Image (cartoon, rainbow, N blue to C red):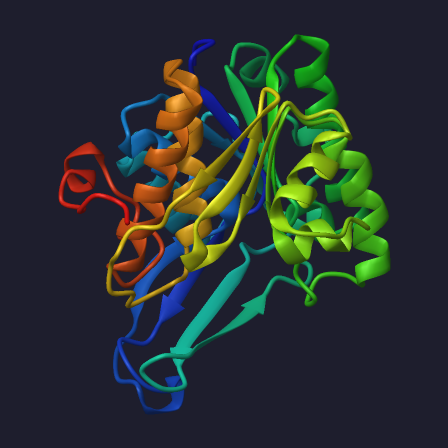
Length: 311
């Protein structure tokens, strides 16, 4: 890794999903991986920027699956810890109908929940351009919370940019617990991605531009409020930007936010303008919507050329 690359730190899971319909009726499943930080690492690598993912996996086939898929994408996994006392987390995904999917998570006692400050890849972080975290990993356990803060502190201590996507899951923790912890973690970050609901979880209110400005008052110079099909609003280095969406037919929304984050961070690491960072982020999100599955929907540079101009 060099100072131009990305390091992500958090949870990764193996995924088994039905091609269509409920699991009980399936005779085969598709096999893949998930985890916000892992998806962002893959997305950045596909866009031509060096990336690494660090976390904890079980010494099992699901863990081997995660490692194999990451390595196949040229993601550095040299800082991954193997936990021989706990399994790799799983996600089972099936379809309620053509528009609705259901995901069941099996992560209680998983290797990911046992993340601790000892797992923080300090050397990788110190030589990175950006450390990226998510709001999901701190919700896994107390030790995972401490690990996320420890990683952010290492980065800040060496002047490395810290990025976070404030994601919140009701399945992981209560809103009041998440709000206090994520507020403090966001205060350590330089780049913040958030949805409107996540920003309100932290206690902010108002229109998207108000939310961006309020989150920025915690210290981040770059705040992007993701608005799904309505694009995004950003407050970057004191200037406001409205981010348009792309006119595409959506077939799968899973992984769209991770694609957006990967697009933005890849351009930030490449040193491009704020406008280009946002345009690439929107294009990555749009492309991901047109492809079923989280990993398959992460575009490379060639794929982005297939999109029409934003409306």
